[in-house]
Amino acid sequence: MTSSSAAALPKVKSRSFLQDATRRFFRNRLAIFGLSIVIFFLIIAIFAPLLAPFPYNKAFFDRARLFPFQHPEHPLGTDDLGRDYLSRLIFGARTSLSVALVVQGIALLIGIPLGASAGYFGGIIDFVISRIIDVMTAFPSLLFAILVSSVMSGGFRTVVVALSITSWIGIARLTRAQMLSLREQEYVNAARALGASQWRIIVQHILPNAISPLIIAVTLGIPATIFAEAGLSFLGFGVNDPIASWGKMVGVSSAYVRVYWHMALFPTLAIALTMLGFSFLGDGLQDALDPKQEE
Amino acid sequence: MLRFLLERMISLVFVLFAVSIIVFIIMHSVPGGPFDEDKGRLPPEAKANIMRKYGLDKPMYVQYFNYMKHAVRFDFGIPYQQPTTTVAALIKKTWFITMQVGLLTILVAFGLGITLGMLAARHQNTWIDNVVTFGSSLGVTVPNFVVALWLILFFTVARNWLPMGGWSGNNSSCLIGNYFCNDWILPVIAYAVAPMAIIARYTRSSIVNVKRADFVRTAKAKGLSERVVMNKHIFRNAQIPMVTVLGTEIPNLITGSIFIESIFRINGLGKYFVSSVSNRDYPMIMALFLLIAFLWGITYMLTDLAYALIDPRIKVGAKSS
Image (cartoon, helix red, strand yellow):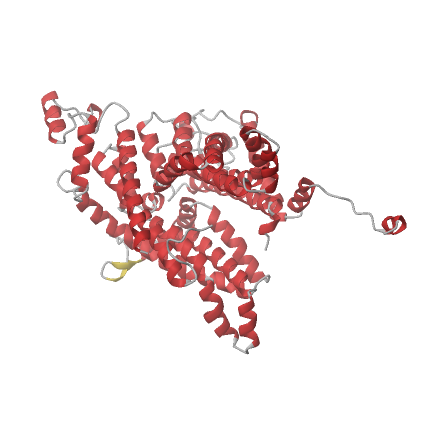
């Protein structure tokens, strides 16, 4: 081969994995749709006090159960205690998203170390952690969350604890499986042969390669947590009263649904839209980050 | 085979034991009990009597061993909310209703789900496929209590076609005696949407995967009709992923949805679970958790056995790599 033939080859611009994934992601219309919904609700949650016309706990006792547009100050009507429904919905986004993000964060903090040590070290450590995972899997997670929050005082922290107890299991199992397959890879053997410490191998070589499934798992775990929080609040085991929660609004509305349809419609739409946003985003990330699974 | 069953049984017993300890500890982890003053004032002697009657005055570990001693003989005690019956009888009564909801839901979800999935797979990449695929991602995501309220808003509030709640209730009209009533329709649809969507999705993707296999091409080359290829070659091989869904969905469906039961005011297992937790009905809570953990364990085992029945290449108990 001469140098002239090498120069004649067409110049291929190389793309990194991340650039490739970004391209794939932005070509997926459903994923963009999901991302926009997520950004929309995140903005609402962050700037809730600025966006809401009234504080979430301000009750107008002479304006209970107004229909949408019945009063110029309440475009979406009011609830059974005369609180502005739009403001309650806006603050509900805050409750929903902060519970979901905190719970998923805790899931990562517990799940990754447990899963990683089970998968990497194996033996007795793996046995013990796997049995813990088995037992926790036998619990129906929602019923367990109801039981836990019923014995605690109720409130934001209760909901987070109740949902976190089972939320880490999926992450731990996933991390363990990733470890099991990655620790046999050649570059890990090479690192070991070069004398890298176990800690360094886990943090530097294995975890970065296990990260895309974890990102996907967390993104898809968020709608599940939003559902669980809404469900707990719906049944009356969630956040305490003046705090706005979509699930609680739905729960209250079911007693009034025959006449005051708006009380049921708006919070259910909010729950459905947020969950759809996150799951479309998660599916889009999955297709973008894991092209092997593409059909 | 025998070894596999034995191993699974031992691990199930271990899991049930662990579940009972964890539930017991959580239930008793806060001071107070089911007969506290806020549920109605009792003279101290009467309260002491009740506590003694139910053994609540004994130390924790004694209470636990007493309960388990009876539980292994399927005697789960007396529910505090309804002391005239037993936990086992109450569960039997409420589970019967939950089972009706669940079995109908399974029929609807699997019937429609498999049909839609096959339809989408046969017309892959056409508008039919797109509608089914998009519809099933909506159905998987939107929670059943949201679907339930939307159905009520449309069919009861806006149109007044169907009753809003109950299960063979007073103002429902039924086909045969107390069965197949019009108040069954909304709960079953609301409950079936999510599993139906999951089943449709799995059916579609497993058929699409099998369709590309060499043996399907061979069958077509032999001149077999489209229908024979679909039924004999594709569908049978696409069953494995479907059994997985069946295995994960059935225990959920037969133990009921708390949300569906509380929205539609159905007196089933899920609704009793909520009232047991609110009333700190220890024997009832414990029995319900043990029942559900047991059902899940058994279904996982049966799922593994079903794999081997459908696909002779799969050996039960063989270590998967």
